[in-house]
Structures are given as C-alpha cells and as structure tokens.
Amino acid sequence: MGKVVWTKRSRSSLRKIWEFYAEKDTRAADRIIEEIISTAENIKFGDQYQAEEISGGKYRRAVVRHFKIVYLVKGKNLEILRVFDARQDPKKLK
Image 1: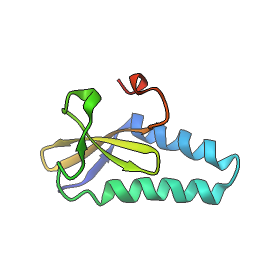
Image 2 (image 1 turned 180 degrees about the horizontal axis):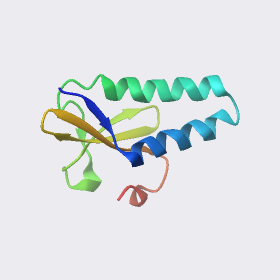
Image 3 (image 1 turned 135 degrees about the vertical axis):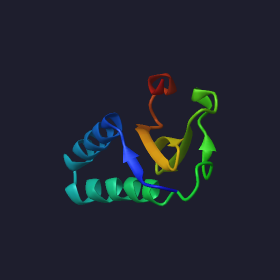
Image 4 (image 1 turned 90 degrees about the vertical axis):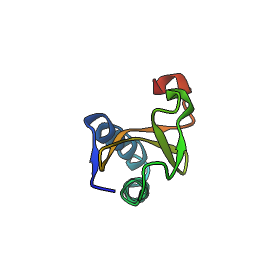
C-alpha cells in the first residue's frame, strides 16, 4: 500500500474526538488518537477490513474501540475519509 492520505474531514474528526476526551484526560485522548492513526497507518491492503454497508460496499472500514475509520483505496494510496463514533446514528455517516 502507498501512503495514507487524511482528508480535511477526517482530520477534523480526529481533532473533535481529541477535544472531547481531553476535557477529562489529555493522556487518554492522546492514546485514543494514537490508536486510530496507528490502525490506519498499518492497513496493508485495500480490502483488509470490512466493507461499509451504508456506502453499498464502495468504502471500507476499520474499527478501533467504538470508532469507524472509513477509507477508500485510490490507486496505491489509502484515503481516510472519516473517523466516526459508531455509537451515533449511522445515518449521520452518509
């Protein structure tokens, strides 16, 4: 797999997740973000994880704790589209 590309929306998602958890514990917030980034960076091939049902199988997802990392393979690169808290209404993911 080529490089991992984080979209503006996915970077915004990470920032919001960190801010939410940092209100209680910044070290815990750092660990959560590190786990999410590490999982994304360690995707070795495009269909390593499940297809995202909501997208009709166009996108794939990796799950870390209760967060979905929604991604798409573009050529040799992996584009992280969004990081989504799976406890939310799945309709918000569209």
